Figure 1 (cartoon, rainbow, N blue to C red):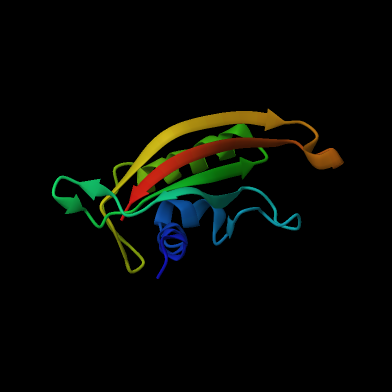
Figure 2: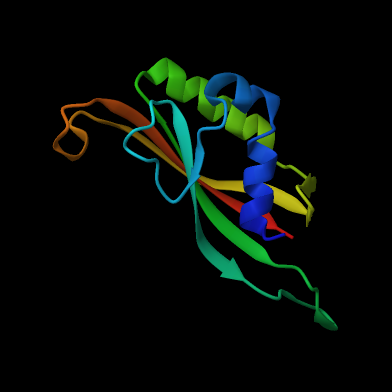
Length: 133
């Protein structure tokens, strides 16, 4: 199982996230037909294998941008909070992937008043997480 598959498996079964968005978690982008709120995730970097004193540690560090999209700030904040609850300092299995640590690197949030010319309004939060496996 890849880390992408493990991340999807973990997030799609995390009770707090499922309660808010069911299974609306997508790789790279959210289809236009999907009603918000929803999550998209993209692998933006991977370093492997990590070096350690005396040789390679065998650990891989992967950075994901996980984006929360919602029609209201309240929905965006609630979903972001559940995402942080699920991932911040997580250690354990994501699907069949053994995660050694998960850390938040940065967040950028905002509001798009005319998303791609559709006259729709959406709040977003792009969060970069580093996952070590």
